[in-house]
Amino acid sequence: MISSPHRPTVVRVDLEAIKANLESVKESLKPGVKTFAVVKANAYGHGATEVSRHIESLVDAFCVSNLDEALELRQAGISCPILVLGVVMPEAVALAIEYDITLTVTSLDWLAFALKQEVSLADLTVHLKVDSGMGRLGFRSSRDVNQALRLLGESGARVEGIFTHFATADEAETTHFEKQLATFKDLLENLDWVPEIVHASNSATTLWHRDAIFNAVREGIVLYGLNPSGTVLSEPFPLQAALTLESSLIHVKKIGQGDSVGYGATYQAFGEEWVGTVPIGYADGWTRDTQGFHVLVEGEPCEIIGRISMDQLTIRLPRAYPLGTPVTLIGVSGEESISVTDVASYRGTINYEVVCLLSDRIPRVYH
Ligand SMILES: *Cc1c(COP(=O)(O)O)cnc(C)c1O
Image (tube, rainbow, N blue to C red; front, side):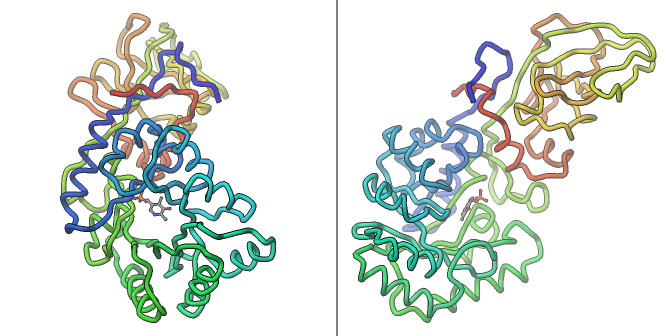
């Protein structure tokens, strides 16, 4: 999608905040633990190349979700290791080798599939993924991992790492987490040999389960200054939100009692009201379920009234404002602020989803 820089809607990204969050995480780790920065999904909407370039010297590797995201980083000149966390189909293995991209192997089926197609795995670097209870991807027994280690060794691939992923690290209840950790440790104990890099920690695990840090961590959401649990658990050290979302008033009018606003005419004015139109809508990732939430205009919360359209939304203003008056959707205005997590809570979703959905139509401006 083409970005729309001539519209006043903009995402501002504070790269120094991301760097500061990364430094805080690193200070909390034992010496020698490697830091992998997760920049999948365009760095959670913050811009993968800009974020990666800004922090490359401070991380040991980047993690992305697919091969194309890895190639984007290589094309941007990123030279440090890149691990693809998802499954890359065998047809694309040659590209991974060519661009020195580390792949995740998740099953014996994948290996059989690749070998049957006579895909060369020589010189490929891989990490093995263990399903300790997430139930999505990964080996489920030490026997299968041992066989994968053998097959990969025979085919000339280098197994550099092994990892797992927790399903409930962001929750107060830890039973499932403990079970997954025990399953992973037990599997490691039964391996013929253990690859050099062992990792299990996403952001939540790093913050709240320090006993589950092996010798590397995979940090995503904390880098962007967002609490992985939303509001359930408190952060052990302060995080700085890196993203703000701003727009401005492009149309202001007074309406009378009973006048309606938006598709479906779901909103009717109680009396005389000032209504402002803001150029952002669900095509920008500002979803329809934010109707009834608010934005900030000169430090005052203004309710989003009527349905969210594809390209616009409408707000009730306390008084007339000139065109071009700034509107804060995420960020600080005067004494008030709206966080990504506030938006997520209103919508009944997670902060991850709010930032990831902000579409490419909104230009990203970096500080
Ligand atoms: C996305 C992802 C992470 C990062 O998760 P955060 O909660 O954002 O820290 C880590 N590991 C895997 C396997 C992931 O898919």
